Length: 143
Image 1 (cartoon, rainbow, N blue to C red):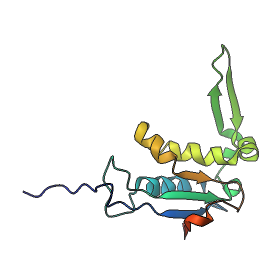
Image 2 (image 1 turned 135 degrees about the horizontal axis):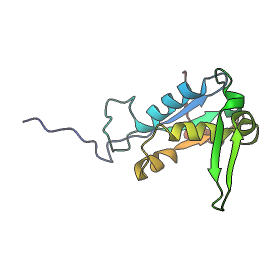
Image 3 (image 1 turned 60 degrees about the vertical axis):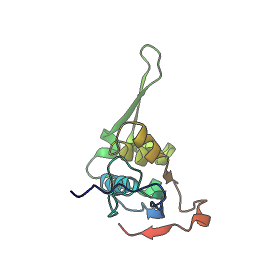
């Protein structure tokens, strides 16, 4: 009887990947980033095991969306006080906090548990073209 292969922590290598979001569609970019974080692009992928890579996203402020989403798509949060629901549309969110737009899109495609929160910590997002991860030598990924 064949046993299922489960990679040990010593067998797993976490690489660093660099993604340029300039001109990329938000949803399509988020699915590919989530796949890299989960490790689904590797032959050693195992559900529930962290086989994914670190992902550095640059130019987050230059993503694109289709249709009228810049005005119609809203991000809501609640302050915790009565009547404290707040909303901001995608255009304003991209101007103020462009990293949150990509982070929330990727988070929606990851498991919503402690494993997903661990994976989300391996995502580094920067609004401009500069990032402080040169020492990790991230490999540029063409999407």
